[in-house]
Image (tube, rainbow, N blue to C red; front, side):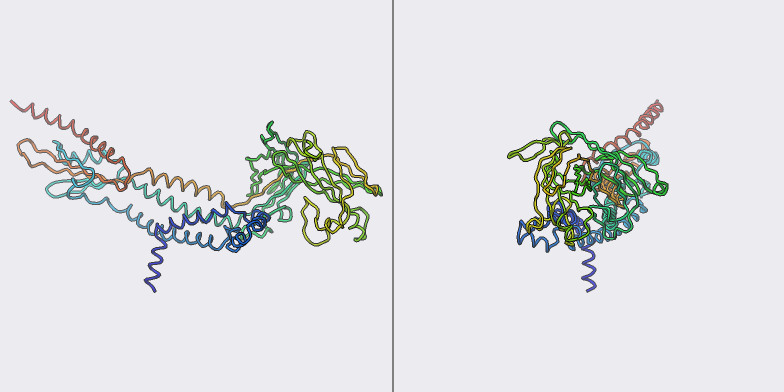
Length: 530
């Protein structure tokens, strides 16, 4: 049993296993990009299941619509973390030990190495060693004494290759940890704010239209700040594509919340507001038509409610603006007299086939609405949540909510209902779609990502290589003043090409340093001849 556990641990902590798990993690993340996820859009998930039948239901049981929170994805993630830790710790100790060790001994036969060279020089072994050590600055080397008066140098270079390798793998480990921490403590919410001085404050989940908390976030301890949207400007190309979006906002955070100071900021798509540890992004925009209902008793109610774009190119929008009759306390009677204005809004009106309102351009050039006025029970008291963009279809099907008018209107137009109520289209305002993101590990993710690239680059570019030089006294002819036999040997620790050129360059430099001394000695010898 102990042997089985030991072998399992060795297999799990091997570099091969870590690479396999990294590959599996990448493959496991693919469904999260290809399939709709419940955390992002549960409606699309339901539509996907309905359109794919048993296959869609099977994917749901296998947690393919919640990939990053699934058991199998978490298991791969955890195993990769354990494998990297078990793999890197022994390698780190081994690398630290290698840094303290001296370069290896000079091989007995340097001619067997892939790179070798042998020559003679008139310089003494001590002079040769002095030149060699001077040339090998930046190398780790060790000078050793050998038999018969020979001396050798063992040199090694490229230790940063292994450093880069370790930096890469430790950065990968840090990236995994940082992403896990981010998933635990991050939150992300979206909210629509009208660009007429309306405010949004990050004090709880109740202020958001949609909110996705991390595993350890309950929404009760968000970073407090407030944003006021004073205006919005959009410029479009002649084709209808957006040139830029720009929101004129003011914000408060920290001490500004206490003293009431508002700080201006221009919010753009690629220029988020960073405050209180959060980031505020400008995602999109839309239009909110303003309607006023004058009831038979003379009381008026005005509402400006955002309508959602159904065409992202022309910003043709649909929605519903709902009214409760004022002064009616009887719930039964009130449900009979509720109003809803539904239909289409076009920022630039264009009549399509069948005199149906359409939009020809996304900017406000000729705004118009095509509305149905519905009267009856809106179903607000049913106890179930309703979309602000549409009426309850069940109420329509049951006949409790009926259409009492249909009209195309432009700003300033007014229609009168059968009961004397008047509905006027007063104009339109813009709204902006903001996203608030909080990720305490975002900075660390960036740091570790940079280290991953840096470590990988070091491990790919730097070459680990060794060089040996042996200088032995020549005993071939004792009458010529002696000499030194130089033997060079080189070995690359990796399979990278290029060390042959470096080996030749180093040896040529050394021989060039020694050749002036040879000429000197030859000249001195010639001057002593009669």
